[in-house]
Length: 172
Image 1 (cartoon, rainbow, N blue to C red):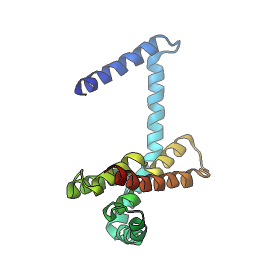
Image 2 (tube, rainbow, N blue to C red):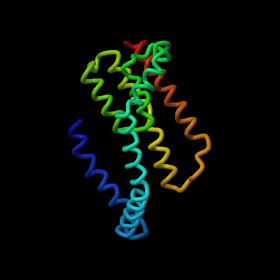
Image 3 (cartoon, helix red, strand yellow):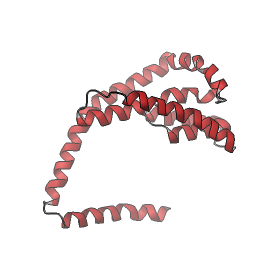
Protein backbone atom coordinates (compact mmCIF):
# COMPACT_ATOMS: atom_id res chain seq x y z
CA UNK A 1 0.00 0.00 0.00
CA UNK A 2 2.87 2.41 0.72
CA UNK A 3 4.22 1.79 -2.80
CA UNK A 4 0.86 2.82 -4.24
CA UNK A 5 0.89 5.99 -2.15
CA UNK A 6 4.41 6.86 -3.27
CA UNK A 7 3.45 6.68 -6.95
CA UNK A 8 0.01 8.29 -6.67
CA UNK A 9 1.06 11.97 -6.64
CA UNK A 10 3.57 11.71 -9.53
CA UNK A 11 1.04 9.82 -11.65
CA UNK A 12 -1.63 12.47 -11.03
CA UNK A 13 0.82 15.24 -11.92
CA UNK A 14 1.81 13.45 -15.14
CA UNK A 15 -1.84 12.96 -16.10
CA UNK A 16 -2.53 16.67 -15.55
CA UNK A 17 0.49 17.67 -17.66
CA UNK A 18 -0.50 15.26 -20.44
CA UNK A 19 -4.07 16.54 -20.46
CA UNK A 20 -2.76 20.11 -20.56
CA UNK A 21 -0.57 19.32 -23.56
CA UNK A 22 -3.57 18.21 -25.60
CA UNK A 23 -5.76 21.21 -24.75
CA UNK A 24 -5.84 24.36 -26.84
CA UNK A 25 -5.74 26.72 -23.83
CA UNK A 26 -2.59 27.59 -21.96
CA UNK A 27 -2.14 25.25 -19.00
CA UNK A 28 -0.64 27.84 -16.67
CA UNK A 29 -3.45 30.37 -17.18
CA UNK A 30 -6.10 27.69 -16.58
CA UNK A 31 -4.28 26.55 -13.43
CA UNK A 32 -3.97 30.13 -12.10
CA UNK A 33 -7.64 30.84 -12.87
CA UNK A 34 -8.72 27.72 -10.98
CA UNK A 35 -6.50 28.62 -8.03
CA UNK A 36 -7.95 32.15 -7.87
CA UNK A 37 -11.50 30.81 -7.98
CA UNK A 38 -10.71 28.28 -5.24
CA UNK A 39 -9.23 31.00 -3.03
CA UNK A 40 -12.30 33.20 -3.53
CA UNK A 41 -14.57 30.31 -2.56
CA UNK A 42 -12.54 29.44 0.54
CA UNK A 43 -12.36 33.10 1.59
CA UNK A 44 -16.13 33.46 1.34
CA UNK A 45 -16.79 30.27 3.31
CA UNK A 46 -14.03 30.50 5.97
CA UNK A 47 -15.83 32.96 8.31
CA UNK A 48 -18.89 30.72 8.48
CA UNK A 49 -16.69 27.67 9.21
CA UNK A 50 -14.97 29.47 12.09
CA UNK A 51 -18.37 30.37 13.47
CA UNK A 52 -19.53 26.76 13.14
CA UNK A 53 -16.48 25.43 14.97
CA UNK A 54 -16.99 27.96 17.76
CA UNK A 55 -20.67 27.04 18.04
CA UNK A 56 -19.89 23.32 18.26
CA UNK A 57 -17.31 23.85 20.99
CA UNK A 58 -19.75 26.03 22.94
CA UNK A 59 -22.38 23.32 22.47
CA UNK A 60 -20.10 20.69 24.01
CA UNK A 61 -18.76 22.83 26.86
CA UNK A 62 -22.17 24.23 27.87
CA UNK A 63 -23.50 20.78 28.71
CA UNK A 64 -26.20 20.93 26.04
CA UNK A 65 -24.66 17.88 24.36
CA UNK A 66 -25.05 15.90 27.60
CA UNK A 67 -28.68 17.01 27.97
CA UNK A 68 -29.56 16.02 24.42
CA UNK A 69 -27.68 12.75 24.77
CA UNK A 70 -29.67 11.80 27.86
CA UNK A 71 -32.90 12.80 26.07
CA UNK A 72 -32.32 10.36 23.20
CA UNK A 73 -31.11 7.46 25.36
CA UNK A 74 -34.55 5.75 25.44
CA UNK A 75 -34.57 5.67 21.64
CA UNK A 76 -31.02 4.27 21.64
CA UNK A 77 -32.08 1.52 24.02
CA UNK A 78 -34.98 0.55 21.76
CA UNK A 79 -32.63 0.41 18.75
CA UNK A 80 -30.01 -1.53 20.75
CA UNK A 81 -27.39 1.15 20.15
CA UNK A 82 -24.66 1.60 22.76
CA UNK A 83 -25.39 4.70 24.82
CA UNK A 84 -21.75 5.74 24.49
CA UNK A 85 -22.19 6.55 20.78
CA UNK A 86 -25.11 8.95 21.32
CA UNK A 87 -22.91 12.07 21.51
CA UNK A 88 -21.38 10.94 18.21
CA UNK A 89 -24.87 10.63 16.71
CA UNK A 90 -25.53 14.26 17.59
CA UNK A 91 -22.14 15.64 16.56
CA UNK A 92 -21.59 13.77 13.28
CA UNK A 93 -24.01 15.86 11.17
CA UNK A 94 -22.55 19.07 12.59
CA UNK A 95 -18.79 18.65 12.66
CA UNK A 96 -16.37 16.26 11.03
CA UNK A 97 -13.41 17.15 13.22
CA UNK A 98 -15.40 16.99 16.44
CA UNK A 99 -16.93 13.65 15.52
CA UNK A 100 -13.55 12.18 14.59
CA UNK A 101 -12.15 13.40 17.91
CA UNK A 102 -15.08 11.78 19.69
CA UNK A 103 -14.55 8.58 17.69
CA UNK A 104 -10.89 8.58 18.72
CA UNK A 105 -11.88 9.00 22.35
CA UNK A 106 -14.41 6.15 22.09
CA UNK A 107 -11.83 3.87 20.50
CA UNK A 108 -9.27 4.70 23.20
CA UNK A 109 -11.79 4.11 25.97
CA UNK A 110 -13.65 1.02 24.69
CA UNK A 111 -11.37 -0.44 22.03
CA UNK A 112 -11.84 -1.03 18.34
CA UNK A 113 -13.21 -4.56 18.82
CA UNK A 114 -15.96 -3.57 21.24
CA UNK A 115 -19.57 -3.12 20.18
CA UNK A 116 -19.26 0.61 20.93
CA UNK A 117 -16.12 0.97 18.83
CA UNK A 118 -17.50 -0.97 15.91
CA UNK A 119 -20.82 0.89 15.84
CA UNK A 120 -19.01 4.23 16.11
CA UNK A 121 -16.66 3.34 13.24
CA UNK A 122 -19.46 2.16 10.96
CA UNK A 123 -21.49 5.24 11.84
CA UNK A 124 -18.64 7.62 11.01
CA UNK A 125 -17.85 5.78 7.81
CA UNK A 126 -21.41 5.74 6.53
CA UNK A 127 -22.66 9.20 7.49
CA UNK A 128 -21.71 12.72 6.47
CA UNK A 129 -21.16 16.07 8.11
CA UNK A 130 -24.48 17.27 6.76
CA UNK A 131 -24.48 20.92 7.81
CA UNK A 132 -20.89 21.49 6.70
CA UNK A 133 -21.31 19.93 3.26
CA UNK A 134 -24.64 21.64 2.69
CA UNK A 135 -23.15 25.02 3.57
CA UNK A 136 -20.02 24.37 1.53
CA UNK A 137 -21.59 23.05 -1.66
CA UNK A 138 -24.61 25.28 -1.81
CA UNK A 139 -22.64 28.31 -0.64
CA UNK A 140 -19.90 27.83 -3.22
CA UNK A 141 -22.38 28.06 -6.10
CA UNK A 142 -24.55 30.73 -4.52
CA UNK A 143 -27.71 28.69 -3.89
CA UNK A 144 -29.78 30.31 -1.16
CA UNK A 145 -32.80 27.97 -1.04
CA UNK A 146 -31.80 24.42 -0.24
CA UNK A 147 -35.38 23.11 -0.39
CA UNK A 148 -35.53 19.52 0.86
CA UNK A 149 -31.81 18.81 0.91
CA UNK A 150 -31.30 19.24 4.64
CA UNK A 151 -34.29 17.09 5.58
CA UNK A 152 -33.23 14.32 3.19
CA UNK A 153 -29.61 14.44 4.40
CA UNK A 154 -30.61 14.30 8.07
CA UNK A 155 -32.95 11.40 7.30
CA UNK A 156 -30.03 9.62 5.64
CA UNK A 157 -27.89 10.26 8.74
CA UNK A 158 -30.64 8.76 10.91
CA UNK A 159 -30.83 5.68 8.68
CA UNK A 160 -27.03 5.35 8.83
CA UNK A 161 -27.17 5.47 12.62
CA UNK A 162 -29.87 2.84 12.87
CA UNK A 163 -28.29 0.55 10.28
CA UNK A 164 -24.84 0.82 11.84
CA UNK A 165 -26.20 -0.68 15.06
CA UNK A 166 -28.16 -3.36 13.20
CA UNK A 167 -25.26 -4.26 10.90
CA UNK A 168 -22.70 -4.54 13.67
CA UNK A 169 -25.18 -6.51 15.78
CA UNK A 170 -25.77 -8.99 12.95
CA UNK A 171 -22.14 -9.38 11.92
CA UNK A 172 -20.46 -9.49 15.30
